[in-house]
Image (cartoon, rainbow, N blue to C red):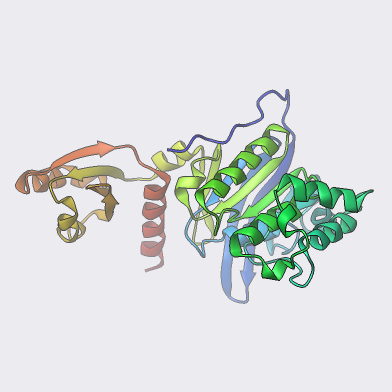
Length: 317
């Protein structure tokens, strides 16, 4: 498991940056999010996790003051979510999952323009410092639309942080990045949190979400579990097992056919099984029959997401 991002623990009293209560948003007759209640304090990193379409991006856009909620109430950086959306947009740093740069402007021009929009006193100097910090010097005069996907994501993050916001909202910030750049992004997140910023990271990569000190698992637009990643994983009403054998993967179809098995997938040479507690003995008998071993292991965020998604689907049926 990845090491969690370091949190700012030295501050005597962390400031409440985000407080949402019962937030809902609909598009025509489709519910995007419903009854979302969240809190975030300075120095904290909160992971919004779950499958695509679960409501993560809508939640971020509400927090950024881009979408007006249809239900509920909330405050962001001391501003009312409904009345002060314009002020919220000025003060947060929001990195969209979509390409949100001016494609015809160069890297430098994008950064200088954003610095001007946020009223920085020396926009040129701010842009140059950001280019140096994000190692963008080679591409400073390159049009943003000509950057590769990885460099474009790097520039989007740089743009979002230009004005040193206290609240940072990142939608899939490591999408399209290689392992080295992913580590760089998480190091930056750690430094920002240690400096007192509050950060919300939306991701469907549940292994990465385990880096966050806090997590909120969304399913079908609702927050179904919150806490540390470990607490969220353990809150799922199911158990995880590893079935090991000479060729455990060949047992996938037979395992999946057992009533009460929620999911199974390879983990190295073994088969990881997420299942209802009641069928543990049946799985053990199956393991003996196939000259395999079965060990109960700790639940992970990925396992919990599968469980809650299954329950949401059964609830809709």
